[in-house]
Image (cartoon, rainbow, N blue to C red):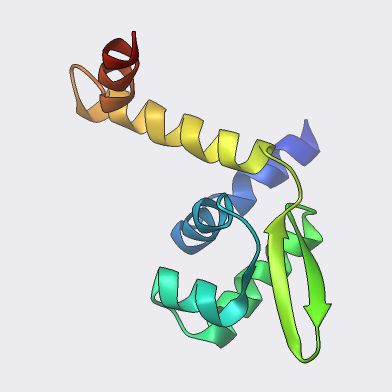
Length: 104
């Protein structure tokens, strides 16, 4: 249980959540991620270091550039579940339910 609580704590930051969502599409450099989340590369690097320590992201170095990717799909699933739960708090008919009805 303690480790699960630590994971939720890691996700209790908007920048880290945005980084996870950005990485769901694949590997990216710190500078590219910084542009996406509109933060400085230094700030993004600090957040990514925390996600790396939590084993939520991994790195690959190519020359002087470091690329980050999600370690597995679970971080995105947790974030999406949290977003869906938030939609239930805000909307009578959450968007994720409407989307699944139109797919049928």
